[in-house]
Length: 419
Image (cartoon, rainbow, N blue to C red; front, side):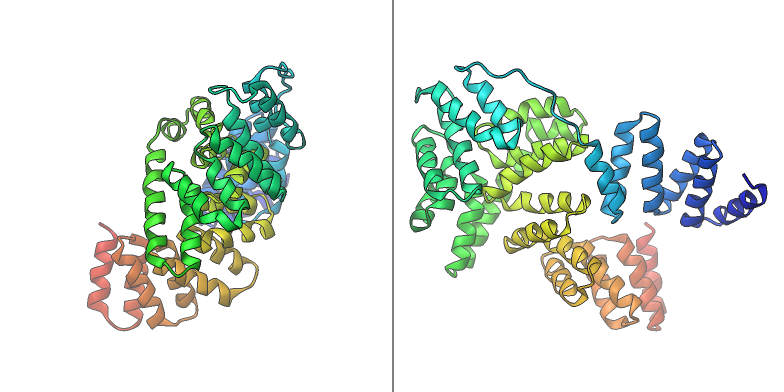
């Protein structure tokens, strides 16, 4: 390799330029100096280079450090590098072959329906029902729920309603929500039964119905109730295991609840598989929860689609979640719209998210107006962000105030930003 080229690359990288650091790391890797290349890639990543995250992921995957590579591929994919999304699909963990469940193994068929090939799920759920034979305490209600949810997602409403009613009668607390999705005439009554059973997806769906009927107060109370229940789930055993990185334990705990039809448990379980880089399984669990009407998970599903390069699907789920007043979905939709050149609509969604209290949207609006030198608008949004405690907004507010000639106030905000 050319020593003169290397000197030029090192001089540029020494200035702290992220792209130059990445270029130097690429040069070093081609020179078979992978150890030093990794160091420069990491410096470039710290300086904000998504390309460096992708390149380091390739290096790590080649040396067998697959878990680290997955994390970096996710980071690069989230920054819009399509090749990283392709690599993630290639790293998706394939389900290990399982022995076929015995004919009378209710739990085995239920597990196979949930974790096996999607095109075989219906058959396994039917076999679970046959093995349970309507007996209490055998998983009959749970199998009925999952079969109803599957048929509902496939547009087979009449069959879905029959199995949802069957699951409800068998004591499954989540079947009423599925019945409400497919029985338009009695939807409100079914959703209310689901709410009484503590099903947050039913709360989301009833809130949407209340909003359509003009009852905004009722809709907000239902969404607040769903949020409180989800906060409890977030503090539950499975979510705490995930937060501590104990994904195997988290999976075991969450599966028990997800098998009953709890869409919040499905959502966290999907994120467990996403943490592992198993995109296909993560998508299946998140999609099950979203198809049941769980508004909170729709934004997570949209993000997964965005990170794997499926922008049309991402937009569709962001819009559904935003319709349920998810401020994260509003913010993510605004980012996606800006990325695809729809700046006016992007600004509308940033404003909606900011009005709902999303401080990253406040910051992004401030940056939009800062770049356009619309100082008064930039001040408005940076000030709103600063008042939430966002130190980055405080620093930028100080810059804007300086440009507006309000030096004393600018200095005050600058001091607050550095505390």
